[in-house]
Image (cartoon, rainbow, N blue to C red; front, side):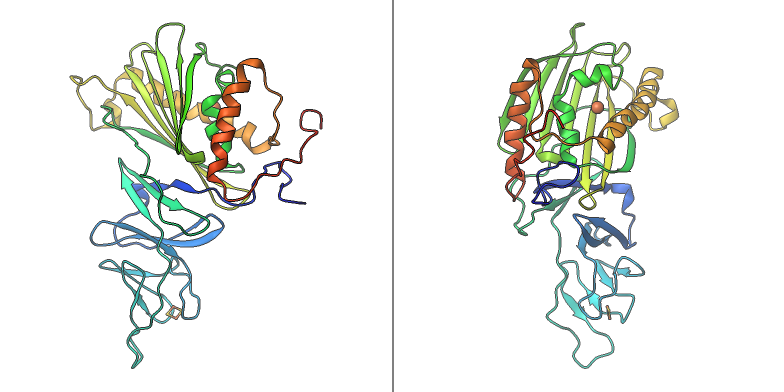
Length: 331
Ligand code: FES
Ligand SMILES: [Fe+2]
């Protein structure tokens, strides 16, 4: 089957970059959680110091999964099988029943970052350290309390970031009344961005941070709202499924009140959050069933922007893409 899978996606390796591991609330103090990402079993917990940690899940002793019954004490995690203890860097620091009180074993620790309510993990197939800073989330924007959507979907992360560059689908998938017109696009190292104007004068900017995170900001588009910030992330579970996370924030004027109770949000903001929840689903249906085109048959409006995005995206994959799907437009 070469390195092309049956869904037509040309890469076999998980991409490199920062990914959303979850929201801060997914990691309560002192509880070990099992996670599966990048085709690996992981354990995550928030220790006493408040920092979230993620390790490879299986104990070096007899292989118990630390996320199923592992106990968090301070910043350490204790294996549920024979109580070997690992510190916040993953070092084995205690073997309570043995004369040999510790071993040289170390759990593989994954680089993490947390800000604006989002926990990020760095993945690099070769195990290299982070090569750039974690993505900006709020970036100084003044916002109302936000809203979230999550799902487990049969998709590749890159399908989501390509959506950010695809202005035509806003009309046909999302039934948008107002469709913005592309003004500019550019690549900037690990970032790719575009900017579009609405016929009514509002505008939209999308910024991609690698192939799994898109940050979109729009202003002056909907009546009664300053604008919105949509932070979307897709994290691969394995080579078939991914977790999809959306964080929505309505932008707020600096002098507007900030309700802490979500029920007290302005009516336009509540309507916006409700609409956003229904907007995700039509994308999911397309992504879960599509066959990826290595060589899409693009219109003149799409050709340059998609060529730019696809070329930029190659830097995040450690493997060479399979270019074999030459019948792309006809099969
Ligand atoms: S398997 Fe973890 S302590 Fe024995
Ligand atoms: Fe979409």
